[in-house]
Image (cartoon, rainbow, N blue to C red; front, side, top):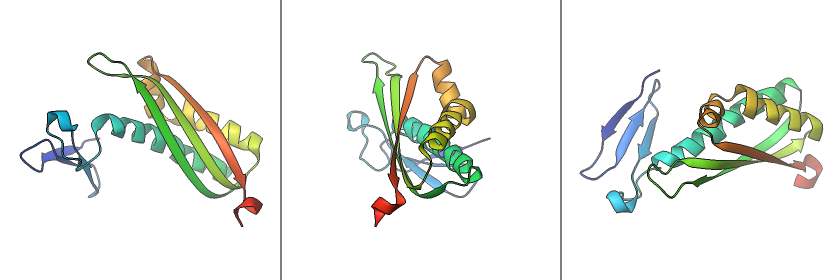
Amino acid sequence: MKIELNRVNDAVHFEASGMTSVKVNIDGSPEIGGQGLGARPMELVLMALGSCSSLDLLQILKKQRQDVKDISISVEGERTDKIPAVFTKIHMKFDLKGNIDPAKAEKATELAVKKYCSVHDMLAAGGVEITYSINITEAAELV
């Protein structure tokens, strides 16, 4: 796997691309010249964890024949005050909507986060405490 980073302006705005033609804008904090033109690197780490877990979760729920109408994920991380300001704790909240068996959703989420998500394993190996919660809204409540 390989990515490319190209500087976009005279400050700290970069454009990243991977194996596809999709571009991701990355920018630094205002303290180092960032102008709010992209996600910050540590935000991207949280995005990577949330998306990795969610992609796996949706695949597992699909195999379990669960009727997922929608999903949203909130990921919040706590960092140290010293440099490097690494994550110490991360909590993911999965909001699922549809006709979903809570027991199946719990098992699927555990597998998705703790077994199949590579990002989780890299962060957890570094000592980050990663937790999650699940909220299910039934399809009947969506009307």
